[in-house]
Length: 376
Image (cartoon, rainbow, N blue to C red; front, top):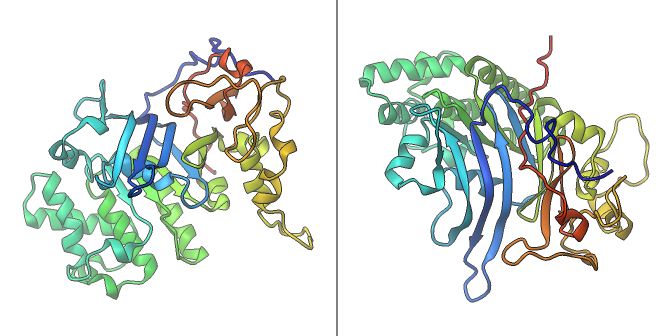
């Protein structure tokens, strides 16, 4: 395996649409008192297309939620700070031009946030206000972003509740969050997020703490709404089963960096980075008896996993912060000087040490206009 050169087939492949959002070299850090700043996100690159689900996976603390919240300028400043990078978004008002969300003022972001980009947070009970009815909370975004009367906003809220499968919306619109079950509260959150018909949804662990039956219902609901509204989804999750069932493209993160990026079928069939292989190997399999499950540490603590990328030429090694860097490391001055996210085969990116062999190859940014076929 050699790193893919930017041929006409890989670098200039025609795409049907432009991305809804492109994250370019995003770096976010947090104040650590007297110590050095904590680099939560370091050089993240990804793209999301209409009607596409990008799954962002990785362990807690790897930077998944910070990446999504930075796109909406929801990271508190201080202690948070965007050190570099851009988040380019295609707005409804001017679809031919990309806007850098990180350069917008607070007032401009309020026009985007909840209107063109919506977000579902992990725990609905901490996101819903307990002293307001769910109807008032759904209507708040509608009245903020749409020039409608309160009566018409209520009709929009009722329609949103019907769309997400809440029974008897005329009665339940006056209910309070504590009167809803966990699954119904999550549906209320989705209704709030989608009431203004956003083109992009950031879903941060939308099925956390729900039983598997409700999880399946929520994810099927998101897929159906995505199909009917041409909506892009960034799905942040730990569950690889959810990724296999719902994702079109997968972005694997570790330590604030993207270590692998590919279509869902390619990633599960041909995982290249040792961390990705560790994630997949740690899944218990029905019908296979083992005295001890493989853990991620069993894979990533093996030096042999990092001597060479599978099938790659000498000098092409996967990056890992706890392993000795190669002798021919070609450091770049400034942030992320030892790391490169490179397209090693067409449509498959891996995080590599920036060796001389890697530095000499060109590579495009992660960009996959791919959607899996819908089930019949």
